[in-house]
Image (cartoon, rainbow, N blue to C red; front, side, top):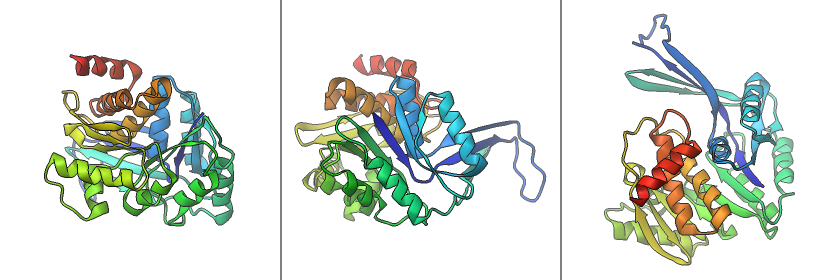
Length: 301
């Protein structure tokens, strides 16, 4: 089974207005609410591709109930730990330009943290664990390491999508995949990457530190794959008008996992990951199976 962890999930409440005037009553012309958070996005895209998963993390209050209900509609199992307070709401106001107001989220106790770690500690051989995203301030900085220490040696396949020290500190657990973007890679190693050779060289540093495979996402320019057992591969994103980049990176991760489970072919999983990330970027919603298959055909031409 695939398990995703979202430490700080949210309801993303997106409102469209003709104009936005500070200090005045503004009326929407369109509004939509959907479950958000990097791990949740991975679970949703996996469901769209036909793969079941269990979404875990922390949820609280009526906002948490909404997220669980929305996931159940997509046949995604919920393994969230219940917490006091309300799961946060992120408001995105679109009126020409987009303005975001992100909620803070509930306080998470040591007992609740330990319950999540114990739950994930029961995973074993054949399971996949996707840990991604930032953490609320109430979580300890070493929460990733505490989880991975608990499952070390259990045969769980690990995928990590995090930034700087959080990601670097997970590499000793030899994740199947880590997915920084170019800017995050520069920050990790305090460098300015000017060309492809530098990009490859710095991505390979993550292999030396323990990662099995590294995908560096490059936005509209596609992505780079380096791995322990393959030659570096740079692939362009398929053409199209970018509509919404939120969740595109999470979609890449989901597409990779879906293909890797089916084929164990890292190269093809990389290709499908790019197609899946692009399908989300070219749509208002997260990638569907039909959209991914259509872009794969374009990439074959």
